[in-house]
Length: 478
Image (tube, rainbow, N blue to C red; front, top):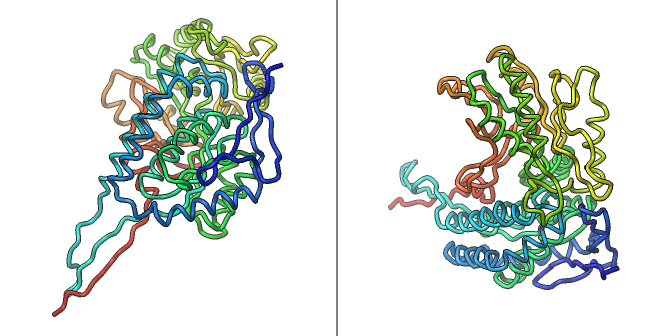
């Protein structure tokens, strides 16, 4: 048996073990076997990271936008230079296909960092002026302070970027915790970033839910940011409320995909199947809840089932696979449970089973015959499962699309411009794609409503979330 990889925390510019020496095992999801250990950080480690971030903030907040921009541009360049190593680490971390991770994650990560590097020099606000006789008012945009950030396991590298890049661009310092199942790539990012940023500006601590809870409850951070489950988000919001911390939440999703009778069915099937199965459906914006007009329902389901049967899951080095395993044993059990509990009126058109007896692979799945109040319609599966419902008219489509507790993303498939615009207005989701699903760009915001959370990632809006507004008024009377 090969020696286990030993991961370490990164605090105040140095790699270190947990203060009490405790560790947790990290599992390779393609095999179900342990391949690494990571610190199981406790209060002492959280205290050390927060102290380091607070001390570094005293100097980092006074850096100029151009200095922060230059640092982020260097980080982006360094990530590009070590892309192959990052991809290999992330693939081991998650089981993702190597080729797709290289093409679909590294370029957006680098682009997003460079976007926030530019955003650092483009803060906007009201112009100075006299709004009262004899007084001049100005607006200052300032960093909020130390940011406690928790990233998820579905996109460990990319979500780390979404967390640290806007925070650091705005002049904040960061304590970031990766998921306990996927710490490896974040630790590698710390190594890369640590060669560029001053000690204490960027800190990484590994651990479990208790570690994350200790971060959020700590008195030092001015802001807590989490991407994760609704339950986790609610716990963070409740903890942060005790000392009125600012909170940024990107939580679950249950994206409706509304396919009208005039849609290009082959194009819709292709786009939806990729957006539903990519990353094993482990994406809060995934196209997994299809509502299709009754007149084309049977044809659409037949074509979607065929597309599912042709979609391949497998090992990271297989260039023909679209996705790898589910992230962990608990997630495999969750997806399996949804299928096992399907009501009698549901029909599994494709998949619906585990693939192999090693690792956490699950077949591309299509389920039809579902009703609005079914569990699998109302709750997030977070797996390679696409559900299909019928609708008879636009009003029913809107009602059922909006009839869930999540409100992150949605899409509409139609050739009629007016239909698309009406649906874009009526869909109660933070994003509406038309005749596509899932593309993201750094310049546009990502975030939802209702139980999908609040605050925006990406874009100038995401950058502004990491700033505070101060009014300064001075007398100019003679």
